Length: 189
Image 1 (spheres, rainbow, N blue to C red):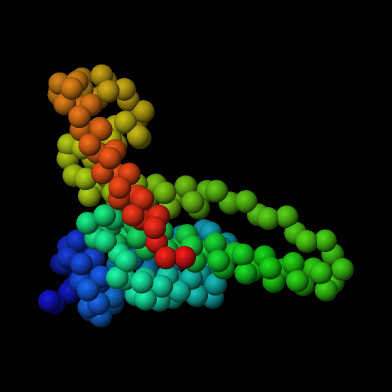
Image 2: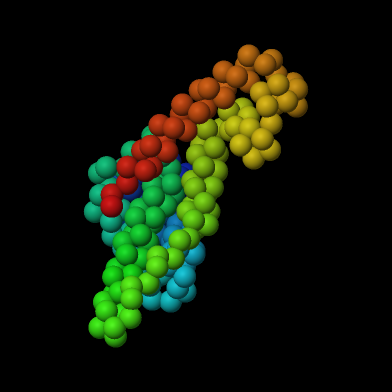
């Protein structure tokens, strides 16, 4: 299969899982900028640490590609999950190194730097990718519920759909999202 910018995300994910090296190259081309941006936000480093994180994400993804299920999560979502784990590992290593230096210097250990914002950004990106994969009308209905905080009745009125139809789409969509996000969180550590 010739892989390039025109190949769909689903086809790319399947080829990646099956071990197609061209899929690895295309996945890197498409998703490395996102992974690097997340690493920069999480690690607070625009240099070597962020580049190391990108490299480690793709190494882990390739090594554990057999566990990736394209029907359960998008490739981008799966890679974002791996990025969280890699960033957490690198942050922990940096903190241990800083603590060791402080101990040698006779200073007390540093308090952890709590950064929930990068996790929120990653969560939003994964959620948006999964809503896109749901398609319409479920994706549109869930966007109205999540992003605009509309009630079922308000969504039904806005989309001119029966209330029962809106409720059914929300229920099925949430079930599908839960399954996909659980699969995304089951990424290799």
